[in-house]
Image (cartoon, rainbow, N blue to C red; front, side, top):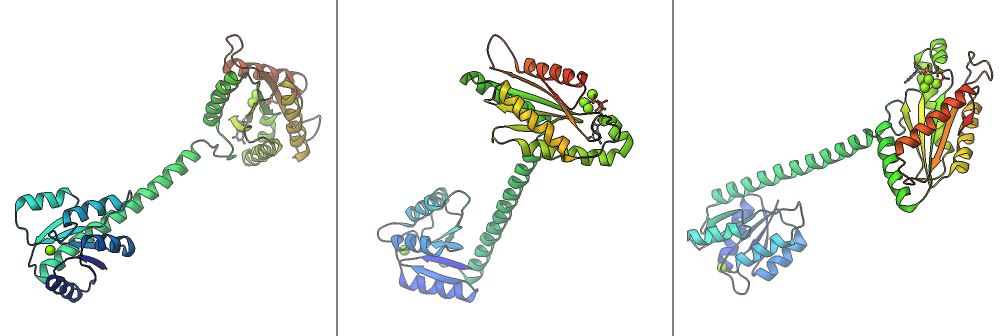
Length: 311
Ligand code: GH3
Ligand code: MG
Ligand code: MG
Ligand code: MG
Ligand code: MG
């Protein structure tokens, strides 16, 4: 615990320093306002004891400057210690940033009690600050989690919806194409029924990882659209590019080699993909139309025999 005592009168400075030492506080003494502010900046005291009548800068001005020096979240208690007894001076002392106002001479007991009270407030304030910081962090984590799918940890439907809308608007403004892939695991009901739901979950995680690993651009987004369906947003991508990405995904999943004894054609877990691309805002197209087009294409891929891509 360190106190900065700003007091021009030598006898007073000596007396209060002595009192402070007796109550276990280390005093730093400044004999005028300018020096006081300088020491405040250098020493970061826990409390400031501040005289009012001083040559040059008076105590009111010192308090004002100290409050200006503090950055957001900082606070050092200021206790005026003065011979001025009027209510108006006390009122002004508090108004300029003081926290307490004591009239000289002050007993050791009163000084100790008042400093302790300030210390307690400072501690509570600090605890609150720590708590606020933790709450901020928890909030950020919640925000992050609220956009992720619980099983696969890729983007969830909510993030997909937000991203699709945002990219739709951006591509519309910039007259850029926007592509969408809908990938659906083939015969996944049989996989689940045959191997169990837990193995099914592991399979979905592996598929999610694989789809993610195929993407190269930071703006691309893989999301879990529904149960065993994944939606992929590809900004600035036309249908040719979309088909390339889709083929990369299809083959990557097939090459995982996850056994699926009910999938008669390959014997492995595969996906079918519907692809669509559009330059948003041409005519009165909406993002829902793009979704519908990918969904129709996905249906075609399923009809065509699965483990394939349709556009
Ligand atoms: P298709 O090739 O036509 O897509 O056939 P499918 O069997 O994959 O399609 P269907 O829509 O009939 O079945 C999807 C299955 O996906 C049904 C459901 O039990 C399973 N499923 C959906 N979500 C999850 C999940 O989170 N975990 C697991 N293990 N299975 C899921
Ligand atoms: Mg004085
Ligand atoms: Mg499905
Ligand atoms: Mg289905
Ligand atoms: Mg399926």
